[in-house]
Image (cartoon, rainbow, N blue to C red; front, side, top):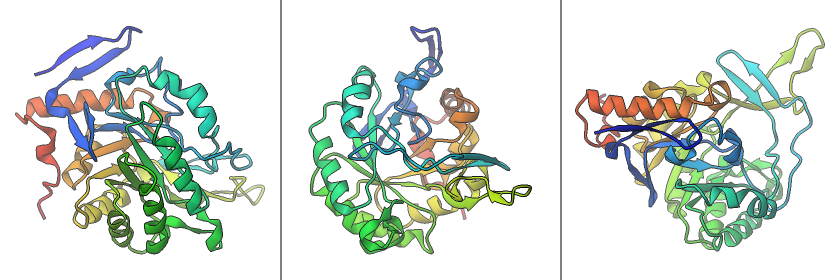
Length: 319
């Protein structure tokens, strides 16, 4: 069922198992393990640590139309069972990405997904239009957690109408599969999920980070230069699991689970509650080999439990 090999650079490659393959939003993947945007750079940074060709997919650091310097430092803070980040979506911009980063990614046998963001609906549409004709892009992940400058800074992802509008603007400019990344900072995430599905999203991914803060008790100042930041890591996993379970029962499109995933058990939990695939994020900082260990663990799980297709466990939670 499985065969293990050594990658050309000497990295131990996880076992190959046909039973791990999945198709998410029309994107065929070797397995359901995807790297989360913002935690894996542009892919090449992990080339000496991970067999990139073994991953289910790579989602690159969020891209905007033009370069962004992000927020002032300090921009990361370790917390109990997680971390806060206020990077502010720093990135090199689409043009520099295509020129400097994409050529390496195009050499890989792994689907490449671009995460995009903007502060106006029109910016999302323009990004999608420019990405449409770029060779080697498997899908677009739309980050709707960004502030809508035309609506007083309210995040697109917290308003069903705004979420619908930005996804529709992207859909009108591209035929690529669209994955919409949902914000947990809402009263009812199911309402947002339904809105983006109606706007013809092909899948949803959740959850993005939860807004939090940390304080220096001696200086009596925020530990982050931006005051608040996004909480990620194991601390948010129970919340993410609950939201993925709710959304999976609400929409017909595939759901990709995110939030505190660090090992095989975590992945299986998300898939049992309804996720078709998962994204590994903060764990990449703690253990760069996390994705490889998870893939090996999933292969062992299938073999030990006589399961031919990992899709057989999706949505099997008994309540």
